[in-house]
Length: 565
Image 1 (cartoon, rainbow, N blue to C red):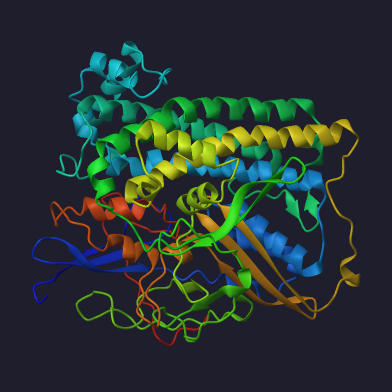
Image 2 (cartoon, rainbow, N blue to C red; image 1 turned 180 degrees about the horizontal axis):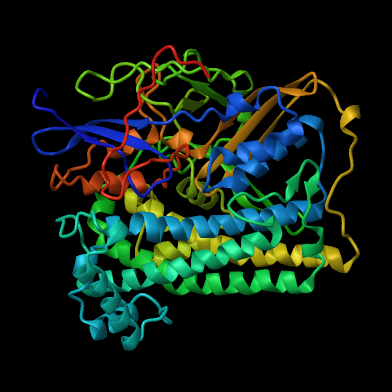
């Protein structure tokens, strides 16, 4: 294939962090090769060396400004695991309430505010017949969310005023009118209605999270041994406030989010059946989130090559990271306990493209027993379904029946979003079960929220891991402690798994594999590439970009090979 043409998308917008995607397409505009490159160095692991292990959580949560609670929790839990500290039941429940609320918030924000515009054409919504849109919404829900004629007319007027005023904000640079859009004008309007409603809903979930977490996005309610939000769990009004918000959010999920995804599945069924956005089919879950006596919300397991007849056990000791194609000195596949994050930047090609045959990303290549894995809601829903999970399979079956899907259909760009919506529905429902567990404990005078320990009496040498399912997939923090200080620290995050570059065997990561075979309707507007990448909900290391009000570059910085951090 000598006629391959390279397309560079840098940066990928509507994600967290800085991601660069390069693809090669043939003369038929079919993607034949792809490279995913994380463009920023995180460095938190280096900062943590030499620190008091009890401080790790407050620093590690700064890895991300979006999923801070989960990094905070995984870090604290890694230290607890190292020291053999078991937290009280109330502390575990409070942590679960906060984390699962974040699941719901993250999924709503991701779909509506980061990803839906890959499916929704805003300009088409301006042409919608509002009366027909109100009727259309009845096809997707028995009780549609805010679908009155007056309300839809007000939404359309608001969108029209944005356009007339020239203040489109994040709507300004979409591929409006693209041939790959499939919704009718009325369906586009319904989606934009819920887009605006989701702004309020996600704000409410933040308030619910703050009830137990103190604040967001950088909470401070966790300590090694438990939680500090004692007064909140003993205050009936605080518990009621939390449940009231979740009830309202659940209403949005049931009447807007789930119906909207059924609409998307129907409109984009052709791309689903074509397998657009399908990766290797290797799925990994660590499971977790206990409720009741011994029930778990998520199952653990590993599936290879879309083989839904066999689920292997998850074994964290099989996790390694290598850097043969990443900008670090040590290329060897290492256990995270021995991981090395010494940077070694090799720059780009003279034409500004990635060195596709050498190192090309700040993201490492994690592997499970040597294999690439995809993690996230898709993996959790498939593993839970195959393992006959009583908390997952009924929800997945219900969605498949109503949306006329097969299990393999979830393993696509559109399917990942369907899996995420179903998971939001599950989390909303089981948050009430976990709250019931907390109330039951308090009812019988169990008010413990912290396990007492004496730091000076703890082992000076230890190591531990905090491994959790979080919104984007399996998150694991590994800490090695020597002389009562952190000797080494590694965080293997969900996006590290999914955005992995190629490894020493030249095996693609999930992002890259999901792009292979996609046909672009218009190479100058690669909407299909964005659709596939956004379906993973990328969350790379946080970055701050400085521009002037006209969007012009103020300065350009280059990382030299000789840098040391």
